[in-house]
Image (cartoon, rainbow, N blue to C red; front, side):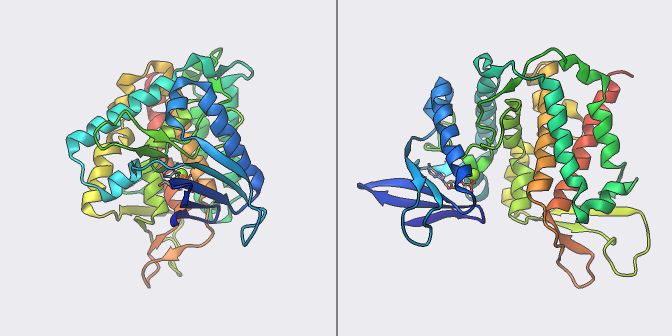
Length: 365
Ligand SMILES: Nc1ncnc2c1ncn2[C@@H]1O[C@H](COP(=O)(O)OP(=O)(O)O)[C@@H](O)[C@H]1O
Ligand SMILES: [Mg+2]
């Protein structure tokens, strides 16, 4: 037996059963959630040829009968031998050319399923629903004590550039006339994987990049835009940097005796050089300040590009909430360098929001 991942939410084991390696995933919280995940995995497999070929088979599921994990929810799944996308970035040698090819292949395949008309539901007004979902996540942020002063601060300087407050950008975007182009379009789905995060993509071969498997869907959505799954893939970079604590933030704001109202932050990424290079080769262009430099700008039509940008914002804002931590982890005695997952994501969110708002504003200049 081998522990593949262990968090507050789940333990994932590789075990042997009937002379075969299989996966055992146990949920430490409410069993309902993991059983929802099982239900979604099964639904996905029967929803399209794409997912049927990509989702590993569920062998068994239910509640653990005995031992320390008694009554916890679990499922067993076929084990896929290979590396996840995140493992390739973090542990493997891969040439710049091959990494570029891999990204291109993944995005093309993701776009196929994103554009699958069969999965689109007409039950909801899509634009209103997405706006509502973003506002709902934002309202949760507003209740976070640690973030209160950031939210109320009218000017924040990040890496030498000035930003206005989050509400200014968010409302500017959600009320933009450009988004009205999405009115009368249906683009929500009830069934989706919703989480093409790098840790959920497994490559059994290091040559055939198109032959990958998808695990671990996010079963918390009743409806979402299929672009959300793709956005979660792009979001892998900030997500991994935050999750593995590979960043630091410099600011004088928390120093005792500091009585300035203005907020000023400098972010630093701490990945080792080789890993950083790979993350940048893979994702830098997707986070370019000018959205027109994003490779998706050319790949998507106008409405799709708007949808993509709304869902990547949803990824970030949801990320601030689900990784919220009250504690600031100071890295030096002067308390000017620290880590805090939600503040880090908050600063990156401001950058994204400003870029998107600028893009929308320019359309009517
Ligand atoms: N079916 C599988 N085959 C091979 N490895 C798997 C499989 N399921 C999970 N893993 C490994 O375990 C890790 C965590 O599993 P995952 O279901 O993504 O948990 P979490 O919800 O915590 O992200 C994956 O990133 C992958 O390395
Ligand atoms: Mg996962």
